[in-house]
Image 1 (tube, rainbow, N blue to C red):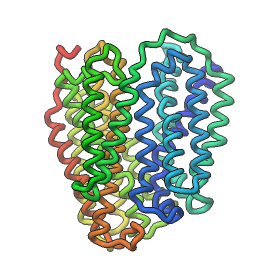
Image 2 (image 1 turned 120 degrees about the horizontal axis):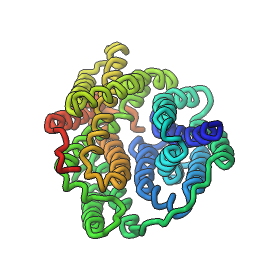
Image 3 (image 1 turned 135 degrees about the horizontal axis):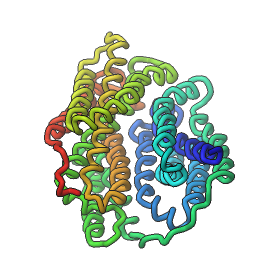
Length: 459
């Protein structure tokens, strides 16, 4: 049992570190804009590039494990992520920061899926549920603690330490993992879809660039170039995946109408959710004047709401199916975003705290319900190949949303007022952007009513 606990600790350390960095940069964005004397539109790529690189390597996790052994790939991934973290702290330009964040994402993308698979294989069947439950607690805490830790370090130490903190954590994970993780035997790796490996990330990166530039101007050459070329590459990628027996992403699952309903609804939910992750920190620091650490603390109700309602959504799902918790969750998110469009300079902090709690609660109810529904709606013989598809698409939608909403916010700042460095001087740009996010959440709410119990034919 001690060896199991030690192995679990190694997986928790690696996964916690990666999940922490999914939210740790959000609060630091205004500081990075000032430090590099750069635009918000450029600095947001430090988040967008990270999520895109995560999506690029997630589908490779299973193939890499089979080819080189899960322990070796897990340790290399942690090492690459740690190296990328140190380089991020040493970045001298925004372009260097974006490049090193890509390196972080390439390492971090495989840590979670390989770690979870190893825990599943290590744990005795009779204790598997409780052990995986233990793993879930720190993984829920990581995104919640990210803004608080980031805010404290930015305010009282320096922004570089939001990345340097990964160095001791990563080294500890490497030492424990090397000593205690069992060496699973290599397996015969399936054929690798090399064409998809090139076309997929290229298409998503180009479309993300186009969406981001579209937030500024949908008729600009940069926007049209990104969307047209990216769209053409995406069509070739889809055609390639449908022709191959073992594609990079299993797109044939879209033949299931229940799966289509679930995944498209989840895209709208994720776009509204991830698209606003930067809005709240920027609003609180740029317009409301809160310090980075105070901002991190103010954001806590969002994580608390998610942690409270995610397990509750599981119980409701078991009794009533996906539709009730999903509709409730999307209604909460939509209401909260629409409420933010009425924000004024004299609006009390309590109002923002309540909206953040509504957002987190809606996320917890919606995400758990949709994830489970999508898996249930998947034809049984494709379940193992759907997890990379849903995980990668989540990161791609997140990058689309962050880039698009940030571009839109920047364009509204140009119209409504900024100080010349991309710093908002009034609330109008934020209210307009929250309204756009609320419209997307409303579309997800409407689609929620179309969710039904997966038909037996899907099995």
